[in-house]
Length: 259
Image 1 (spheres, one colour):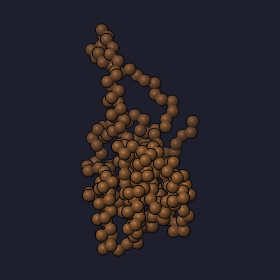
Image 2 (cartoon, one colour; image 1 turned 120 degrees about the vertical axis):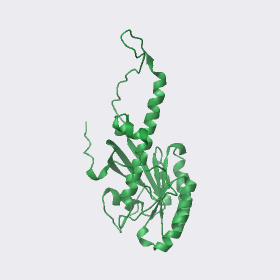
Image 3 (cartoon, one colour; image 1 turned 90 degrees about the vertical axis):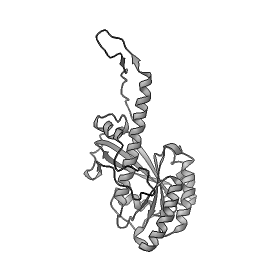
């Protein structure tokens, strides 16, 4: 059995990263949910540490999806990028509150002719990152259609949404201020968390992906705790003269494999 490499020191998350805008955020608290922190401390996170969470990145051609992913995963920026054909993906491993956690970042093509190919990979996403270009208002308008396409393959109640404006370095502060208000409105309509980044300078890129990892991790742990709670309804009743505890959960053999 292959052993995964240790988590890089710069991928360790001990506190919930701050949101970019209080006006459009998925998490209104300043820290992780208390139930999640307790579960991590008591090592009751179930299969979360063994699963790979799928994150799909969608948006128009040339908005900077690949550059965004490459800046975070490889810390590089290539201005002479080649358009993604179909899909590509990167794997990133984190340690959140002491628990290993993996994200699979799926970079999908923005070209119309590859849409059918890319859409086949949308299914099973736990988070969707919808990317637009801050210097091109039309790409923000198109995010609604990208979201609609992605949601055809996913359950809206179980997917976390992030709306990300790229190329922040190419826009003046005055123009950005105007564009930000429009972007926040769209994010609020989508019930998505809004971020503005620059793959060229690296501004907010690391913070953004740490936020995605943290919020997705928390959602996974809460879902696992809910499963554990529902399983207790089927607990086996054992009567023993030597024990005052009449209720005990039957032990299950741990799974031999993970998804």
